[in-house]
Image (cartoon, rainbow, N blue to C red; front, side, top):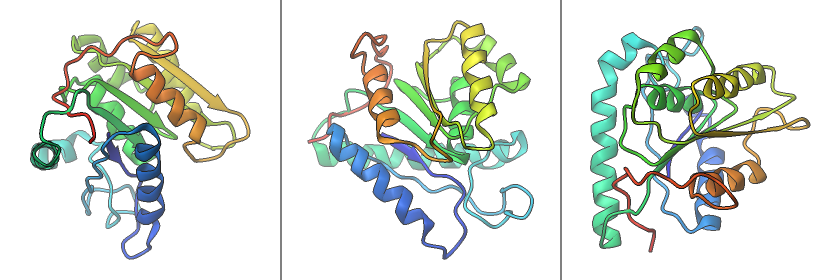
Length: 211
């Protein structure tokens, strides 16, 4: 699992809460977890110096190739330690990380086996246009909380995926806020792994089973 964090204010310590949650999810499902870090200087207004992901086209042109090269190198090291390639690779994004994960998926940017977007991601027209041209359609799980002010973006994303006939599943939690719940994470793993009636993962990822 490649976990993409939300926006993180420097020296806030907020990253530890996100990383602990991702590590706990990985341990519960028996998978290795990779937690790359975004970039500073590319965040939204008032958050320019926070750690963020390049969701804008200009930022992607400047930073994306280097970011993905870092991920490839880190994954290669994990595979070396595990003694073999990962069977499957999933990208899980939270908040800002979910918006970026959605962009990666719609552009077919990574050879992975599935994506999960929690409390982030949208059905913006430019993403729909990109998705309509993408042939490598890794399954996508979308999760949101009904008390999250931005949850309409995720509802729009789920609708967009249905319009595109993209393999997807969504799960909203009416009482949840800006969060990724344990049940949503469990459902994401089940769907992306092809369990409980979910669509089988297409097997494009160069992944290694955690050992």
